[in-house]
Length: 143
Image (cartoon, rainbow, N blue to C red; front, side, top):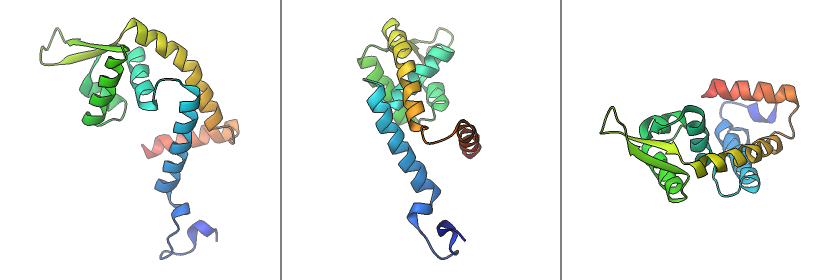
């Protein structure tokens, strides 16, 4: 029996999925920061969704980037302060404000994509191509 599965009443933190996912995420965030200058992973995710889908409401953008309403509001505010996104009223529903990339935001995103791909490669450097495919499929099943 492996160390991670000794018995039902033995709890080892190092064998827990949440702990290991958090450690892997911390490692990835550090690698991302080294490669992608001036953007956090959450800011990059927002730029990526806007580049992919065009202008979105803050609520939909939050859902599509897996961020709660408080988090997406802060991320959008910081990106707006950097001049990377703009907000404007939705023509079909004046209660909604749409968020869109600015020209600078699109330019920054295009530069950051290559950097983010380098961060991905470094994060996955200890896995074979087959392991990466399995790992990503398994992560997708957990979400």
